Structures are given as C-alpha cells and as structure tokens.
Image (cartoon, rainbow, N blue to C red):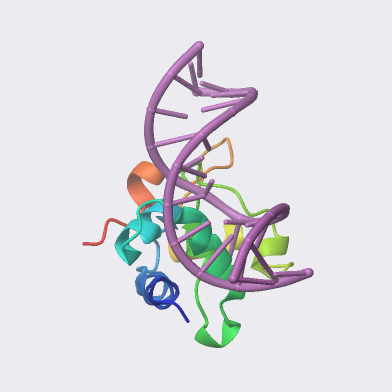
Amino acid sequence: MSDFYNKIFELVAKIPKGYVASYGQIARMAGSPRAARSVGTALKHAPDSLNLPFHRVVNQKGEMAPEYVFGSRSPQRELLEAEGVCFLPNGCIDMEFFTWREL
DNA sequence: AATTTGACAGCGA
DNA sequence: GTCGCTGCCAAAT
C-alpha cells in the first residue's frame, strides 16, 4: 500500500458525521493536491472491512457517484440526510456548509 | 516493465 | 455558470 493510499483511508475515516469531503480535499490532506483521481481509485479498492463512509466523499459538485460506486443499492442521499447533511433542490450537497474543513 | 484507464480538479473560452 | 482540455497519482492489464 502506498502512503497516500493509507492516508486517504485515515482521512475518510476521520470525516465527521454530518459532513462531506471532496476528493481534492482528501488528496490535499494526503499530501498530493492533484491526486484526486488516486483518491477515487483508492476508495474503490478500499476494503469495506474498514467501514469507510464513501457516501461522505463527493466531488466538488457535491455529486458524482450514482449508486454503483457505493456497492450498488446504497442510499447515499438518505444516509447523508440521516447524518445531518442537507441537499439542494438541484440534488447537490451544500458544499459551503457541509464540506469537511479539517477543524 | 510499459501503456491505458479511472469514483477528479483546475484553468481557459 | 457551463463546456472542453490538461495535469496528477495509483491500480489494472
């Protein structure tokens, strides 16, 4: 496992409940601001054994992975709503208020 | 070992 | 604000 890879898991696992983080955000925390793609690849390869909250990881738009990305049949929207995240009428997450800011 | 793809992000028009 | 091209890192073939 590459170091980035490991950090990505740690960071995703550290995302507070009720918040979401963008790939670029995590990539930046992992030490590579331009490794957003690697973050997605890493999460895809991430064992569910870690119980990583993929649904809290979104792109800048606040939407991206339809459903098949979360292992299919994973009500991402509902999960986030249940955790306190609100969705805009356009179906995107309110990035300004729910994007994790590494407090 | 090398090339291509991929759950993106950033900049230009 | 939206559409298109380029750039980056890691994994898969």
